[in-house]
Image (cartoon, rainbow, N blue to C red; front, side, top):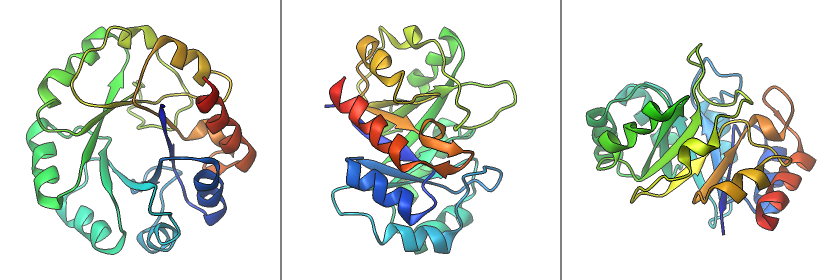
Length: 210
């Protein structure tokens, strides 16, 4: 069964809708430039309502150790997601220092981008493939990429598919690919950074029926 990550959680209503509908991972965005940014105290409050069966994921972009420590000291996270230009040595350092599994996001526009898995494979626990945008935006863009680029993907690490997924297209994506998990953010929103409970439910139902 393909697992499901709902990212950009910033309210208790969204959290309850996701956890109640069967999400496996909930993501908190600790990137201040993102419209889905959640401050540490709000994230701490929200994380306290996550069932033990669901993993909490903290999303960071080119963050320094002090900021990651500030967050992880206050918010009970299970995983760290790196969505910036962190090189393999930086990823490995974060993984060792903070002692939790690391997801590395790989922005994809063409087949050359897929080659990044070769340099990161030994230092990550998961990969996440997202849409690469010219403006450098990190996630939540609502744009898909050519899923065919991942059709023959052979890596030893589990991976997530992200980038413009919603209830209408995730079934098609899963008919072409076999990711270990799918990740959605803007695809379950009624406006930017505002989650829609019915869209969350329909997305999860679509994944489970695919």
